[in-house]
Image (cartoon, rainbow, N blue to C red; front, side, top):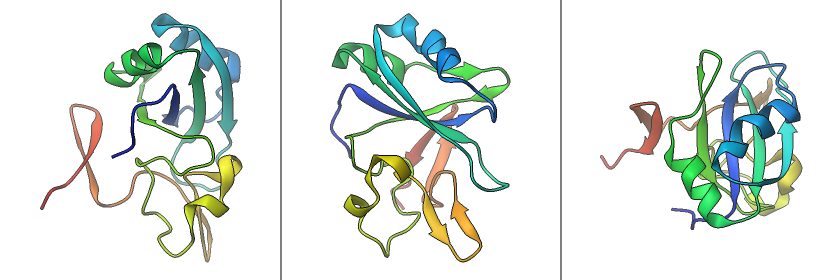
Length: 134
């Protein structure tokens, strides 16, 4: 499990979302320091972004809330800059996560292109993805 930080990974965003829309959505939890949108590069999955808050309490509120943007249920996970968020860890177990850097964290390169979304080992309950224990 990733320790709580002021940095969040947000997944399942709408395709053409703008940074301003993400800031507008997440500012209800506290001051947003920055947003970095990771554009979708394949035909499957959604867009992801890094949302950095000024303090951990704001990130905790955002992470614990049920977030929707339009008709999409957003997924959140804590993130350390330069690491792969645990919500997407396991997509590419053959390459070290530290070599991906923040620009491509959470995306793996498959033979046909990158793979998006949570790993198969995750399941959803009430709109949240959690690790299976079985």
